[in-house]
Image 1 (cartoon, one colour):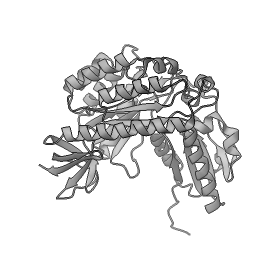
Image 2 (cartoon, rainbow, N blue to C red):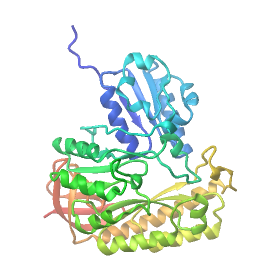
Image 3 (tube, one colour):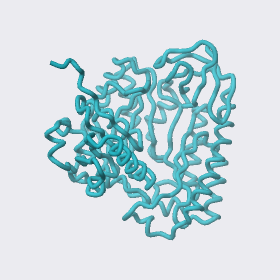
Image 4 (cartoon, rainbow, N blue to C red):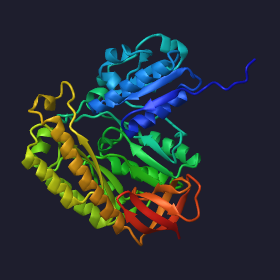
Length: 419
């Protein structure tokens, strides 16, 4: 009789933090299916899909005995296309991948399982107690999106917005703290749309407040990407008064030109973002701000691009996440007059260069400041502001939070020494 422990499946994850979280859920359910490789796809850009297809072909060439299960947003949107790739034995939909009963040999052998994501009305809390190789943990608070930005297919891959209960989020956070995680990140597709199923007056800030109160041992709470107009009064109160809510926000801005924002069908204009940023910096002067930006959106001429460039330069966001526009089939933006691909890439490069300068400025502004670093390796981690930190001198234990002082800053991050 063999005493070998059944292998865990290999999981390749593309895309967002929510996908990473869901990969951990699948890893728990599929424990023991060692000859299975799960490819968790992303549909945000054509490049993300291309990388996933390439990975599947590479996996099959390396070992054609492995059973490849494909899931994620791209698989949800076009299951037939993914099932035709070599080595793929099953395509699982986004809702189906989170059902434990679909992670058996019998279920995998039964063929594709892709349910109608648009008919899903609820989302259950998934208690994940281990995030492989990570010192911060993720908690899903919300799923799906009710908005229809003209460039985006994600609502059709994720379904309508639906929220995890306050009790479910607290249970997840508590379980992670018991496993000695110091920092928890609240994640979802559109976390600003979180609502209580018992009292629709309660919003995201109320959820954060409830988690911090119910789990006093939680040292750091962080938010993932949030819509610029998604700030409720309780969230503002916490940002001003609660040191355990980290001074870092990832804002889904997308453009710095009002005309382009209107054509994207975003719910904010540049004045809204400017007002938000001024208020954030007035109450948390050290706040780190990340923003998503699309370069070369259809109809973006030189004037509109310059408006975005000037706006980003003025705001001096320290962390720019810039993506050249990518056509998504059946979206309104794909029918608009396109910007040449070479121009999109050129504009994205200019914005990223601007981002390097802004990062350097921000990190230099932290010099002399006392910070607390969540260590991810013995000599690297992230500060409260999500600045990448290099520790000089005595090494630390991954997973611990150390007190340190910033002694230098550059475009890559900060250099710190223990206090």
